[in-house]
Length: 466
Length: 99
Image (cartoon, rainbow over the protein chains, first blue to last red):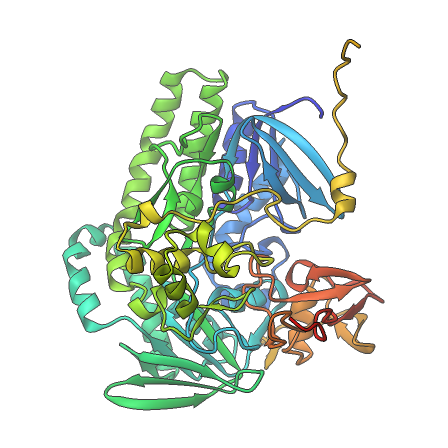
């Protein structure tokens, strides 16, 4: 292992880039590890290579990421791209692979900025070819300039509107937007409306998106239930109930979205403390205002610590970096706190809209705890009914569920079923989500080959007396 | 079905093989995007029930877009196209095993 870096940042989205830049600004040696070929994360994916057509469709919010990426290129940050992190040790060691060769580095402080994944959206037919997440469709726009010709968007939340509008402006208006939130959800959310007015710009943007979708003549259905995706192998139609009627729409692209949830694979694997967030219906690692986790070597910045969006993530990145450079003795605590104060204030006003959004666009119960015959573990094809059956046989938690029927043991390692398994078991066994807990996550965090493992330089064994 | 977004023009291209058929793609595209653009929606069959799957998350998390590239199981969404690359569906190895 080479000399340790002061700071290792994992993930080059808005949180990771800001954290790396801030730490670099204070003179720390920084290594930024990212799985993608270029910086930006999913939100600013491929922004440095965007074409004029894509830029026009994706809008000014996307372009904002471009400046961040250029600043990163000009900085002293060691930015390693195309890198898959597969082990993070409690001592601050990070093992990763790039092009089938593994390496291990060490940091005095690690900032985990691995962002979010889309909430699992189990519903009948969601595994068929042609069903993908709304985020996936947006990644295809950002990274390849391609769009689905006959998309039907299903679910709820701001990203649904954004992508619907982007598809309209890309010349591929969706055939329908099928939304699950109800009038009751919206009414319930109004109690959060006054604080949310601080975020009036975001609210206004949302209303503009909805207006653009309406102007384009894209049908919108709300309070939709009984949603199912049909087709032999490939998707050919979506059915649902709304306005007291049953509907069926032909499509080859069913795009699903129910908000995003923190990606906790790394934070779980190092045994950090996590807690269930009832408003956002997901787990997140426990952090203080600076993003410091339950182990002082690790901070978490951005959506990986709790969903806040890109602007909040960029602010959190800076705040975590200030704390990290202070902790390793580069700046005194006083300076850290003075510099962080305005950032913390700004972040709290950026977060003002969240309780309103969380309440207005909640994941429906049948997505959190689907009907018995719905597959919840895509890899091992385990259904919700299987999990309920395991519970009736005495299964108390997700780790036990693995030995009952393999949920979470396929290649995605529980990323797309973990939350659902917890939700179902909590309900069936009448325990809290925290008591039920989540899958135990172990290295390697992503499948690696033996060749990669073997390429890792072996530390010299200390000489032992014979 | 996927198409290029309005105003997106393709200058140069690379050609790779999918199931021995040539597919052309824009340099920098992922194998997953290139196959979707070429109207391939079924990427693999699951080992459990041989049901058809295609890309789901496009960000390296779900492993539903697994394909064979030069004899290795890789995520099509995390692999960039290269000229002359040989891509195929992952063979199902346990199809005939009685359980």
